[in-house]
Image 1 (cartoon, helix red, strand yellow):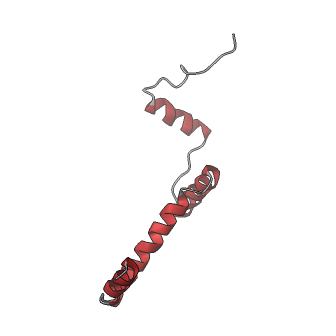
Image 2 (cartoon, one colour; image 1 turned 180 degrees about the vertical axis):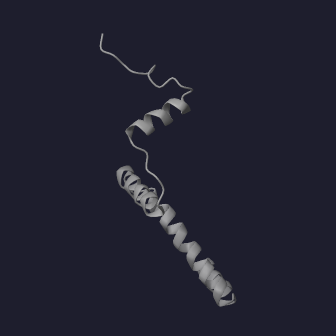
Length: 84
């Protein structure tokens, strides 16, 4: 019996709610694989859209700078490159 036939046989033996879970999982696996092929800019736009839809606050430029400085141990300005 091929893996495809075995999977189908096992899937048919499941209750309908479990069959739905299997389908959802297979869809998730497909999305996970295709998500890696989406350009970074598009993925970031998708993330931003989900954040906005959730009602969470987006950081403004000053808040981002403060967050970066706190994550770097308060050394936010030390890494600026200046022309010599």
